[in-house]
Image (cartoon, rainbow, N blue to C red; front, side):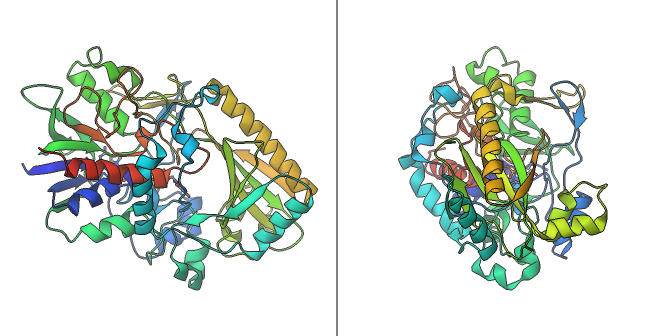
Amino acid sequence: MHSQYDHIIVGSGAGGAAAAYALARRGQRILLVEKGRDLPRDGSTLEVARVIKQGHFKSKELWLDGSGAQFAPEEYFNVGGKTRWYGAALLRFGRDEFAADAAFDCRPWPIDYAEMEPFYAQAENLLGVHKFPIEPGLQEILSRLKRGGTDWESQPLPLGLAAEITTDRTEAQHFDGFASVRGFKGDAESSLLQAIRPLPNLTLLTGAPVSALLAASYDSRAVRGVRTEDGAEYYSDTVILAAGALHSPRLLSDYLTVTDQHDRLPAARHVGANYKRHVLTAVLAFSTARQSDLLRKTALLSSARFPHSSVQPLGFSTDVLIELLPGLMPRALAGALAARAYGFFLQTEDGSHPANRVRAANGHGLPELDYDPGRTSASANEHRALTRAFRRALLSAGFVSGAQAIPLAGTAHACGTLMAGADPVHSVVDANGRVHGMANLFVADGSVLPRSSRVNPSLTIYAWGLRVGEHLAGRQP
Ligand SMILES: Cc1cc2nc3c(=O)[nH]c(=O)nc-3n(C[C@H](O)[C@H](O)[C@H](O)COP(=O)(O)OP(=O)(O)OC[C@H]3O[C@@H](n4cnc5c(N)ncnc54)[C@H](O)[C@@H]3O)c2cc1C
């Protein structure tokens, strides 16, 4: 089947859906090609056993780590991408996080905060971002932390959740790591794609993994479309990669191999490099009192001692927390502990290092993710100190805690593998998302982030996707 479109977008997650939204509403003809399918609306995406225990909806695709061991990254292939499963903590990066920070190996953005501001505002509006009151159980923990004389500051956390979610206990207790059935969570599918799916100028192709980018016949520095795994080819004026930071760089790397451009395109050596994911630790705090908060994830904690870090509660209720406790523990004991537990998620910005990278398989074996947090030692050191200090503060406040570092498979916050920057010597895409040296190939997903920041990435990815879309809609063919 042959088609002609203004733009082909590969992937319907945060970045892809945002670019599609901006372009479709400006009347551009779009083909949005998505590897996965629509998630079921039968309630199964809210079932703890199916989602957490069996990992039924997670990708089973195998990768290799830097030492050659196999693992399955925490990826989700479905319409809306990982946003259908995310915890909807939607925060702007700080103004300072658009500049370089050499001591932390942080590269600068090619644009400043003011340039992103209108797109942040638009994304917040579309996703229904607002703050909920901090719930009593969490407020008690925060007050005890303060009484303990520590310097932890807290503020309400901006969330992409509808206010009505609190009227549905099942949805309210299962939004972080689950996919909403009733549309209470602002995500790429419910907040962006649903608004444009009825438009005649948008075609959404699901269950169609893109396997290759196609070169223009006149010059391989221009693409003419994509090929999907079933061999079908689709043609367009521009192609926008938005398959996520583990996948977009592999499509581009394969293209550079096939067109023999690895040595000719200056940006080529950065394709797949500078992988970032945050240095992450989950902490469970136990007290003698039973916890009964509904959403739980209502505050953001920070400390001036750890400027590249932040702490958020996990939106996990007792039935989810019980699954995080060691499997060998008697069920009754695990249940009693989980009922008295509050989860926290500690994240520290990781800097950019060229050896932390994604490698395409190029048809020979499995793809590879080589990442060692030790390569960005400033981040690793701050995170270690953060975890120690937070657990010590919890203990002084009367909470015993357990901590678990999130392993390499935790790719939830994957970013940075097609980094944006001012020039091809240091980056892959320019300030408008165009691949340096390529005429019509753009990137709209988390791959572009030069910095991972001290907070979660999605709002910035949505804002970037909207901005890339607006840029292309205003551009002459
Ligand atoms: C459990 C969990 C909790 C999270 N919580 C938060 C949070 O609270 N706040 C926050 O900001 N972030 C959170 N995140 C992270 C957030 O979901 C990601 O940062 C965001 O979704 C990344 O957007 P993206 O567009 O780069 O990629 P994705 O959302 O992953 O989208 C990529 C899309 O491309 C598709 N695709 C892949 N390969 C191909 C191909 N070859 N052809 C066609 N399509 C393809 C995929 O199926 C997918 O739909 C969380 C993630 C998880 C998993």
